[in-house]
Length: 536
Image (tube, rainbow, N blue to C red; front, side, top):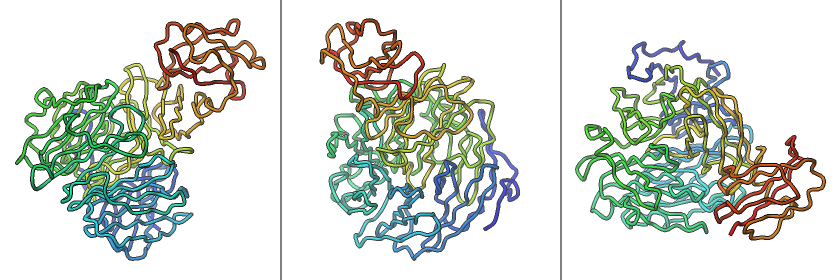
């Protein structure tokens, strides 16, 4: 093993200049094909990943800003990641496994229990792979895999809970001759399950119609692109989804790979089950770069999500308008390789280091318990003085590479984060309050002071159910000076006060589902009871 320091192997001293931040390129020190950033050993730090058919090279990030290089010789992979790579710990042993999307099939590289070796697993099926992902498709708490198929219906692999993956084809991207290029799993309708947008390309018009597969909540999906105004026969290989106008739902940047069938699309989520193309008012009508790679991060940490398309940063203004920069940071993976809170890039053997500014930040490393271990599919919301931002944990964005599984927030000049709310795939909601900024937090499912996972098994008694005007509470004799707090089903606090005569006036609540928490004035985890109730 050898130890590499960031500036000991400086490739170039020139800087890419932009208005908000600058970047410095340097040698990545990789020997094989760069496939991005991901935490390979479960320490919460992004590592550099470089692979070929018989080697996995990892440059492990250290707390002091150095990198420890390790290369593991593997069984020869039947399929190299020539088209895409996805990463996640799908067998829950604490070490990250890899999916290689090749031109003729799919190979899984499964890490052993100390991350020092990998088992090669390839199926006999022909798959002309495009974008690949790890995601819990059937929401059973175990990560499955999905691979876009270029010339047939797409394929997926369902995890049996023991880390074994069963192959399926069809049901999620079914066009007979394919055209399935860029899948991204997201919750566009805020119903707390993952849907899937498919960027499509090539051939006849129907083959390249973009798709949105809406999760029905029962393990099935309905393709609804037309009704959502997302069915478009432009040519695209990938898309980037974020809350570009900070209104609480996800909007979509669908980047054109060629203008032969139309320009880029910027689809505003109207919040009513439809989308509207707002590219004409976005400031991007002169953005004439085409690319297969599109992703989204907050590169300058101002609290507004940016787009990187074809390596060019489009700085978000927080209102679905953007400023086109002159920067090109390459088509690669993204993450924080020096733990300074700013997003860096890797592309073609170069690290593109973000030189930062004075904006504040906060990062989250999600750890699932009832959900999959990486929390993939979780929605993370951060509230600060400037408002609420949303992010999602995804494995496999853009077209080809792997980017960080950590959730990154820029805070601008806000000096604190009031709360972090995590909506886990299991349905558990955690709220963490008053977390320190300018650092990374490892947040474990069910470990917050407010966790609906605990609440749903509490022995608090309430009546009547459903409630109309008043709610009576019993079985709280062991709680001294009780305080009540009511949360809506999204985890937002809607009522709070001292509990008098075991009675709460709920007449002002709108009809719906709520969670009632009763605690002592000195909140302790073993001195709290809670229950769900319905207001009619």
